[in-house]
Image 1 (tube, rainbow, N blue to C red):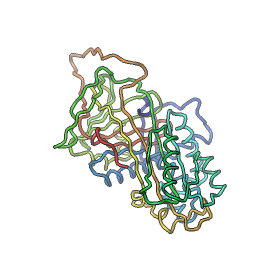
Image 2 (tube, helix red, strand yellow):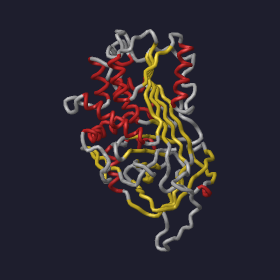
Image 3 (cartoon, rainbow, N blue to C red):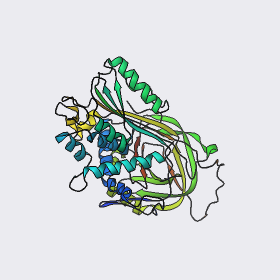
Image 4 (cartoon, one colour):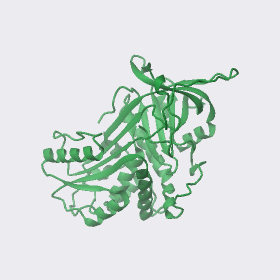
Length: 404
């Protein structure tokens, strides 16, 4: 299930990020609070990555955790040198004249620590051919800042793929199996990033109210899905500019989720318009009112080899013979073979406590607004405290799965 979310509204402004949430009294008020300086870079990278991935897979479900990908690439820069290092940090949106590299890694360290305190399974693993000599300095720094696991794999790819699969299966509590095949191209250096969240709605959907309903994938495709229901005071917006409706829901925890329902045929147009300014405008315009809300009960996973996508986004050197990872190993011709990202999402009715079907008292002068997510929609999850983009989702067909 999605990670727990809270009622505090997230604000993302062009000049930075701010929140109406009060400061956590137990939060670190020293250098740890500098993790918030990552917010503009993380959100800009998140939307850029999401848009490229949507464009590369038209008509398909998309599910990624941008912040975990940002962390894995920043971690990789610890072992990069020269133009390769500069390309990684520049691609993530960092300007070293504005934020020193040491501060970037300290900020990500604190961000990683905060995310681990949530009910999450997340991590990075670097798999290297056992013939390579891993430098202790890289191993120590990557473990310190990102809790990276580094593992030597067999030179025989059939054996190596089994080793990797077994490791990932154990780390993700068997949520991910057979990520690699013996038929895949042999790889020398592989970066695997994974994240799974579970949590609890603060205001749960009503279990007994879930019914099979129609979901219109497109003009010619209809599928049956279990549709969840709740009727409550909900923040919502009807955006005439981007031709969509959206709601903001609350979970127990420290995150904010936007469910966005574009008009038919408009989902890609809405995605292409996503930016910090768009989210800021939506946040400013949200209003509260009685809403009869219907959202599909879905389980979606995404598994992506990000090589082609990252090349398009300006990270081409890390996969080429121009790569310089002499900070990882003394092997001069080492280049990244694969970057694999795996994430999982489950939306169901569960809340803080069991709930019965609602007994709704209507205001006779004001009928509730009905918002029915029965066609392709967008889900965006932001963490209020770190202001990071935890998940960006495009749901085209709730009955299908994202490609590997």
